[in-house]
Amino acid sequence: MRLLDSAEAREVDRFVIGEIGLPSLVLMENAALAVAEVLEQRFPGARRVAVVCGGGNNGGDGLALARQLAARRLAVSVLLCARAADLALDAAAQHRALAGCGVAVEEVGEETLDRARERLARADVVVDALFGTGLTRPIAGWRAAMIEVMNSARAPRLAIDVPSGIDAGAPDAPGPQVRAQVTVTFFAPKRSLVLLPAAEAAGETWLAPLGVTAEVLERGSSDARLLAAVELVLPERAREGHKGTFGHLVVVAGSPGKSGAAVLAARGALRSGAGLVTVAAPEAIRAEVDAGCVEAMTLPLPAEPGVRLGTAAAGILAGFWEGKQAAALGPGLGDEPAIAAWIRDLVVDLGLSLALDADGINAFAGRATELRRRRAATVLTPHPGELARLLGRATPRGSVERFAAARDAAEATGCVIVLKGFQTLIATPGGPVHVNPSGNPGMATAGSGDVLTGALGAWLARGFDPLQAATNAVFLHGLAGDIAAARQGEDGMMAGDLAERLPEAFRRARAAQSRPRRGLAFAVGRTEVAELAGTSQRPPRVAR
Image (tube, rainbow, N blue to C red):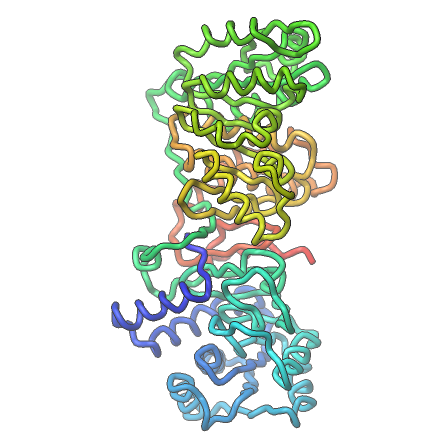
């Protein structure tokens, strides 16, 4: 899905209202209904709701919500942080409708903050409808103090569209901001609801399309997208298929002391549906690989004195590639200069689709453009340090630097880049950056990346293009980690747990695709991005 910045959010509003012809008041009503549904679902015991409204359209959404909640027989307090005479056109209409339904609106100003604090203290839920996506500067003055009043309330906070104080398009969040437990956003996710540090203020984010079709929301370009289970390409396995139907992957990995890297990559590949997997590894660790993954075949490679692999190994592989669909190369191979040269020659000459990781990437440190000589699809899976070495620059830190570094690497190499870490990024040359919301800190453990490399290789071997292979592998790998965390906790999670949970991740993602799509929920640092607003289930709580 598109991940909107502030300008793109305004353009969607303009197109829906001006070109499609949906009146803004209709959209406001749809927004109010969506927020009311989420509020009742997330806070089923709430009886008293305080709605804090500003003078713009976000405040109009809040006024419309107050009327909807009153109609559902909830006790509603409305605090208007503006003069009624100064309300925007649609907000003024909602104010009149609310008054006509007998719901009182209390105007709040600098002199009445203590009274507002008393109103919020009696609420079961506080709704933030103060500022929306149009805000582009830090909040100051008494309205900043009002945000602190809202944050000090003991009741949970629900934000409409974006938490007040957050710029919809920016990951940084200077100035005061509402700290929400739940945010209901409209049309498409906003960048500040996904990217840290701003996203920490959003809590669980529920997406409501407001009756607008996906085709309309996909109109226009965007240089950032959010992955979701409903967007993956997950075909059912052909009934008449056989092991050759689903691709033969060659995993070139491992060295003495690092046989586990080869084993984990093989297990990740087989759990991702590859029909056949052969692990090409130094002869010295063949027995360890055979024992670690009995379902995989092995191809022993001779090592030369002083290095782990050499020209003899390259000759064996050259005669082995025929009839294979893809290769996964790099985990645990070693970083000696001789092995790096061996890797570079092998990678450039290889005509198969390739997942390149770890020592395979380090072999091209400072030589990123040499990967443009590749003739087949290539996906690199660096962590930030490996990406920095590849590009010859400082390690990227923070969302803005990581986005820029992933894009630069894709352009320099001509390859798809999977920049691993919290919110793994997937960048393509000249295309948008995809943000993955699945996964958790328990996955920060040795071998996790090896499982991902094998999974990615499996999707390439199955015939998927490099972007589809990367999005499927990354999302399901993270979802497998979330399943493991839900069952056993994050502490003590091992890479092998991820491989074992991949089939369950497939099942959950396919189940999400088969359900009616009424909305979407996600949370930073927690997945069930497949969760749908309006079902009997709830999205996960955000760990604070």
